[in-house]
Length: 122
Image 1 (tube, rainbow, N blue to C red):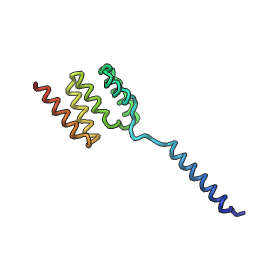
Image 2 (image 1 turned 45 degrees about the vertical axis):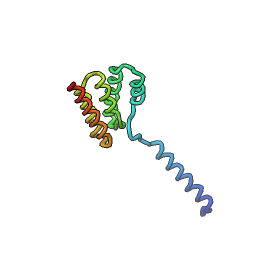
Image 3 (image 1 turned 90 degrees about the vertical axis):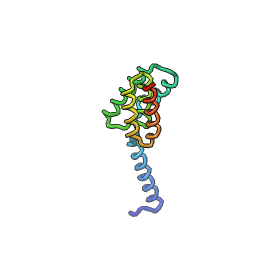
Image 4 (image 1 turned 135 degrees about the horizontal axis):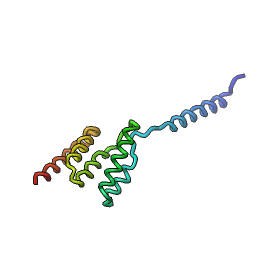
């Protein structure tokens, strides 16, 4: 028994569709966001910096435990929060981490760090 060309095309189409659906179900996101976006919104609303730092640090541990990757801006946001709390050493550490992970942020991170050092001298 031989398959007709239309039956063969239908079967091939079903196999292709199944392969595509299987590929979509195993999709892994590039970055693990956790509560990063709501924390940025909270920062803009003026929510407690201490609570935001705690949430981002907790989420950072979760991301590391999953061997995941933080999104661009994550460490910069932590740095800004630490700056607002007067924790300059931790701020600089976060800005340096952001710069190392995302070299395209180097100019901005350098700018923030140079402004922080100017503010500390005054």
